[in-house]
Image 1 (cartoon, rainbow, N blue to C red):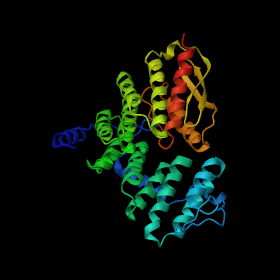
Image 2 (image 1 turned 180 degrees about the horizontal axis):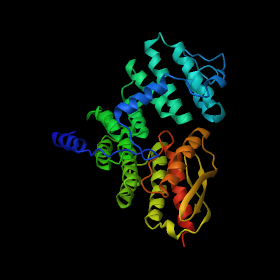
Image 3 (image 1 turned 180 degrees about the vertical axis):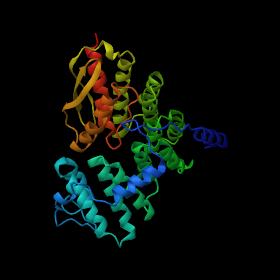
Length: 361
């Protein structure tokens, strides 16, 4: 990065306008209020705690010290191969990860990783961002990773709990080194409505040799900001990127689907969609994700996933968050992708656009 580029990016970030972040009930919180909420939640057990058994294969290596493999021995493999596929066991999973933190309490090297796993489970499995934030704060205090598994996730929690300024303050701690161009950072700046900062970071990531990832993030940031023509331009840059890995092919597929949806969205008028049920589908990670959209009194009443071949983990997160956001906004503008389920949530959003456009009179 040249001196001029660095100065320009500093100016862009320094000019950030602190726009209050509204919760579902229209309220906002100060940083002090959020910290208090996090401490209260993190130091008390959830309501379901006593009724949920601690149940896991006794062959699992909870210490993380052994070089084990397979879902019945390795904790990470057990999480991805077993727990993620069984939503009915997600509370048990959270209790298990609490137990893992206890098991590793005297192992500084591996304790922060256990706390990071617990925090992710609270957010992804249960949507409990207060307790997730508590454990990410704990992980960072124990010497855990200060970046993608810490600051960005914590910043996202602060934002969702009601304080955009607190989220921004954490993101600024990234500075201007290569880590500030990480995909998760670009995405969060875009989700926060700061497309200019997201685009500056994305352009730098593109120059580092990953234009497909960078321009996909830039397109998503513009889409969230309602800048559809600009978003389409960035998605077209993804299509123009050199072909190669499966990741690049997948990103091209995502860009192509988003271009098609945005072209429809530009002419979408919800007042011209009669009340009723509408269906469509869009490409997810593995296959098509089918949705049913119900419109009543010129508003979106519900969005449901009716058929898919995705991981239940990603679909459950996307259904829980993305569908609610579309309904809450009574439309598809300014809807940010769901953390942890980006591809599936994009598919739900794109399919919703196609369903509504197909029903417009």
